[in-house]
Structures are given as C-alpha cells and as structure tokens.
Length: 212
Image 1 (cartoon, rainbow, N blue to C red):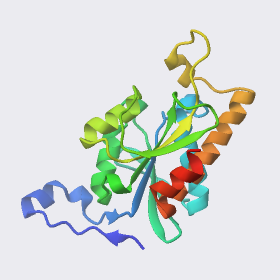
Image 2 (image 1 turned 180 degrees about the horizontal axis):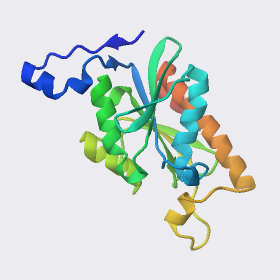
Image 3 (image 1 turned 90 degrees about the vertical axis):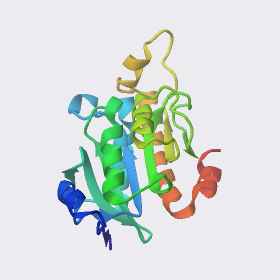
C-alpha cells in the first residue's frame, strides 16, 4: 500500500544518502512524545507514547523497528497509510528523530501529527490544533527548531498544572495516582480518538468534536 520513494538526487548525493533508498512514503506520520525507559513509562510526560500504543491497536501496527532514532510501526486507518513513531532520544531532543522521519517518508507539516502532554489544559481533556508555539514544552521546541517551522498538527493531552509549589519538571515526570490517574487514562484515550479523527475528518470537524 505504501508508495516507494524513488530519489532524483545526483549520483554523488545518492551514494551519500544511500540509507534512504527504498524508503516508502507515508500518507501520515503520527509521533507521540515521551522519554524512553521503564522509569518514565507511566509518567505524565509520556502521554504521547501511551497514546501511540493505543493507536497501534486500532491501525493494526504490530511490528516495531528502530528507525531514524525512533521506534516505528506501520498501519492503516480508513484507507489512510500511517507511520507511528516514538522517538527514542529524550524529550528535549525529539526534533532530531522527527526531522529524519519526515525526510525519510516524504512528510510535511500538513501530514505530521505530534501528540504531547499539555500543562495549560485541564486534566482529562484534549485539544487539537494546527501550528502555534511551544509554550515552554521542550519536546515541541526541539521539533520547531529542527523542522524550521511551527506548522504541523498537535494533539494536546491535558495534564493540568502542578499543585502548590511543586516543580513543573517533577510534576511532568511523576506518575499520576487515584483520580489523577483516571483523568490521565481518559485523556490518553481521547487523544487516540482525536488523532484518528484528524486523519479521516480533518481539523475543523475534529476540533468541533474534541475541543469543546
């Protein structure tokens, strides 16, 4: 189903970039942000990874491989070919793998969806948008820097602000408990639904359904 990528580069350039030969183009690249390692698996900052794992079941993505500094898997949703990705660099340098994947699969911002945790959205809620800033989120900052643009889709998984004087870094790297865990799980599920809706229904309809 995927279309093979045939480079038109010069022989010199082709030899230099032989890694990319035979890479298949994707209709959508869906990236979930997070930190690799078991110690981070259940933290708020790994909302993107958690969401990708849910989406994988829906799109039939079963076989994961290391590629461009990320774990990737291919699937399909309503006749749309998708590549799922979880960058294996740490959050603050997510942009490197995302840029490499965009180049490898011939994806621009109109076909890139990034899923991430969002402090400025209430726990248990999701917001979808195209473009915008990074609001201090280092993963988004890194992607903006590496891509040279802020114009791509974002699925924002609300985690809310830390209580009291708790440090933001400590908060996002903590595991939610009790009601907070329920809110987090609900938001991750909604983020997965919103991402797939974005693929098939477009931005306006998805925002009407999920942004409230």
